[in-house]
Structure formats: structure tokens, C-alpha cells
Length: 627
Image (cartoon, rainbow, N blue to C red; front, side, top):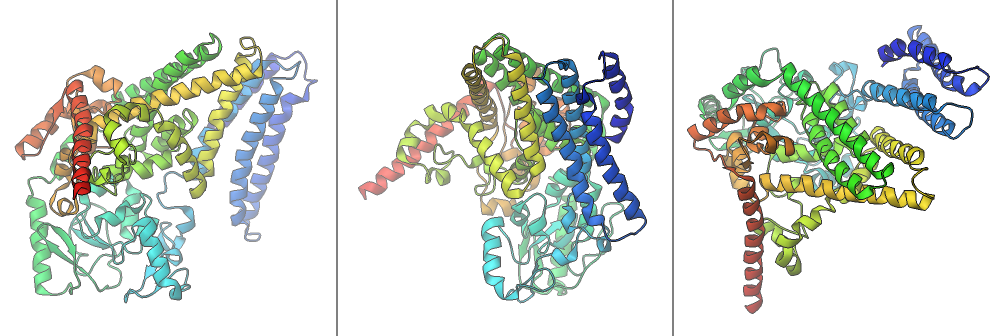
């Protein structure tokens, strides 16, 4: 951000001074005055901090928000200047553009996307990763809870129940990653990915960890801070990773061929050691193990410049479509046509932020999460963090009821008999007809949900992006529609129709494609979780359509190749069609399902699933009523 500022501020002021007849209007100097004031405070703070005059490091957060505040103030000032005679509008637009760019660049520095753990949990004593005094500790006897140095032991049962209800909290949470058994009891409440970690209690989470964190050095640093169960510290780990074993804990894990099952036995017994050794051997020789296959695919398709250029062109085309939609709605007074166009554009913003949220663009979270925030927050008014929290659970355990949030479509329609219990009869009878109309309300509902999420989680930075989205829309409408619409009421009506149609189109567009990929396929139960390997799980719960069509790939944001996406979520999407044959061959050799259909066949399967689910559920209810 500083590089951008110091390289551009000179040319900007050259342009300002060249295009004004006099400097009598003080409005030109307002932004420079605010910026100079903030710089004076900031560098005074740095000088005092470096000289160790008092403990003022805690004031750093005030300076951060002061720098954000100057952007907001200058944006309001530039907007006000649009309506003041004597100030050229092009200079006001220049200031708005400059302020918005500065804010987006500072956004990365301010909120530190490169750290997975929130700064309030960091401490120098643990290498800047975790602060031990904030770790929630479940006592060994299971009766007490200590937090922040021992407070709250008497509140253990109530607090534990609250955590279990809200987060799926598990007492003595154990899982296996790269042949090492980890005690994640103290880590689960702060897991950045949410409560999905508790769903891997007693299971091998290696493939899930690699899918989400395989390229993250920071994730391995965090992994080093987690206690390892006894006798596991000598296992072979990824290069450069060294673990501390931590203190010995009771309530260990017995390893069986079907997975890791929690059991209260001693880790030092001969039977347990033999079970662990057998499981290590089975993992390394398992024909469904993806380690070697992932290495081959990563070497061929990850990190190539060509895919990043394609992504940039895709993003630029989407922005141009948004610009065209705004012109149709305002300049040409065609809000319905503009809404249709912006609905398609917002859908592709959804695809773009989806891939950026998977770190599939640059391979760096510090860059991709900013791109996600731009396309999801600034372009659409949504929340990237909300999306990651929800979507990561889907990828970790697709089509598992109670975990995969994409299955939460009740009480309006259901895809299996478990969900059908939550739907009334009238909804089941017409769900194959009401499916598409209800999708039109998909985005408006999530619009409210995301705002509540941001407020509850105190993600004020994302709320700022939402404000910026609607502020840009307000400026556009107020400056371009004055010559088209006779009064304010007509302008508001035009904007409402534009957003309503855009949200409806976006909901149907995204919801329909998501439904094709997963909804009509098998559900994963508790028994399946214990027995099914990661790649088989992904292949069983996904379907590909339009496999050999680049048109289908582009229209669907490359998510028509859903199996490839679930195998390699961090792969650049443009590589999905290239790796498709290799994935299909990998599945066929191991007897895994690999479904590929035409668009129409997949659509028929989806709607037939709605009809069959309703018929069975209604027949069962009628039978029970007769009894």
C-alpha cells in the first residue's frame, strides 16, 4: 500500500495542479491535510515505541482504524464535492478511485490474512502462534474446565454443554494426520475452519488436512504446537516438521483397520502399539491413498502463470459485464435487462471468489483472500469468511447430514428421507415444481444471514466492504440517473428492480449448478465415515456433467467437473479439464464411482430425486396414518 501511495501521489497532484485554474478552493487540500495528520500521529507513535517510552504498543490498533477512517472521511468528502459548484467532477472521481484502491491495499496489511490464528491468541512465548493462557483446557478427569489461568472450574458442566451444543465440541478430541496421533482437545474451539474439526474425532484426517492446508507453512507451525499422543513423536513427518510430544494424556486412541476409534486404554500396551503399526502399514500400502497421485498432479498443473492470466481475464470480463449492466439500468433505463446481466455477472463473481477462497489463484492466502473479498464483498456485498466457514465443511464431509450446510434446504424441499421429516406434506408434493422458484430467494436469504454472521463475529472489515459496495452503487445512481429519471422515487424504484432481478438470477444460476453436482447423490452416514477413504468419499458424492465441453466449463465456473474440484480444491480451475482423464483413470483402476453425464441427464437425475424422495416420504406418512 505504501509503495502504491508513494509512487502515485506525485503524478496525482501533478494532474490536479495542471487541471485547475487556481488554488483558491481549499477542497483540493482536504485529503492531503487528513493524511498528513494521520502520518504525524503514526510516526510519533513509532518514535516513542522504538525509544521504549512507556508501553504504548497497545495503541497500534487505534492507528490502524485511524488510517481506515481517513479513507472513509475522504470518500465522503469526494462524494459531497460532486454536488458543489466550482469543483470539477473528474477530480472527485479521481479521489474516490484513489481512496478505494488505498483501502483495498491496506486491507491486507491491517487484517493480516497470512495468519491463521487471530492475533488475540498469539504470544511470543510460542513463536507467535498460540497464547497458552487463552487455551480452553478440559481437565483430565472430565469434571473441570479451566480458562485464562484457572478461572471457571465450577462452571465446567454448563460451559462444556454449551460448547458441545454450539461447536460440536468433543472432550478428548483425537485425530490422525500424517501417521501421527494428535490430541486436539485444546485446539478445537479456536480452529479457524470452525467446528468441522470435531467431526474427525477418532479418524484419519490426513487427506482433509492436505486438501485445506497442504501448501500452508503456517498450518504446519500451528500443528507443531498441538500435543502428540505418547510414542508418536518418532513417526516420519513431512520435511521440516518437528513436533513436541507435550505431556502424557490418558484416554488414548486405539487404531483399527477401519479408522481410529476412541477407546480408554493405555497407549503403552503391546496390543495398541501393534494396532498402530498395522494401521501405518495399511495407510502406506492403501491403493486409495492419494499422496503419490497428488504429487504428480501438483507438479503438472499447480502454480502456472497461464492459469493466473486466464483468471485475470475472467475477472476483468466479469467487471465489464457489471459495468454494462449498470449502464443498461441507468443510462438506458432498462433495469430488468440490467438485472439479468448483473445476475450473471454476480454469479461469476461467486465462482471467482469460490476459487480464490480455495487459494486456487496465486496459491497464497494473503493474496487470494483479498481477491475473494473484492469479488464477494465489494462486487456483491457478501462475506468471504462466511463462505469459507460454510463451504469448508462441505468439502471436508460432503453430503453428510448435519455437517454439510448445502443440504440445509428444509422445510421447503428435501433430497433424502432424513431431511424429508422436516418438510410439511404440501412442500413435498410440489418440491419438484417449487425448486427453481425458491432458488430465486436463495441469495436474499443469505444476504441477511451473512450480515448477521459478520455482526456476530465482529468482522467489521467485511461490513466495511459491504458498505463500500452500496456506497459505489449509490454514487453511480446519483450521478448517472439524474438526467434519466424525473425524481428520487423513480431512481429508487429503478435500483430496487435492478437488485431484485440480479439477486433472483444469481440465486437460480448458482443454486441450479450446485444442485446438479451433489444433491441427488448418496448421503454419508456414521458407519460410512469410519470405513470410507477420502478419495472414495469425494467421488461417491459428486457428479460431473458436460465433461468434454469447454462451454459448459466456462458457464459453470468450471464446477461441472466436480470430482476433480473435490480431489484438488486448491488446483487452478482452468486445469480441471486437463486433469479429467487422469482422475477418471485413477477412479476406474480402484473401483471408485466416476459419474459423468450430459447436462440434461444430470438435470433429470436431480428432479427425479426430488420426486422420488417426496413419493417415499408421503407414502410412509400415509401408511403410518392408517395404522
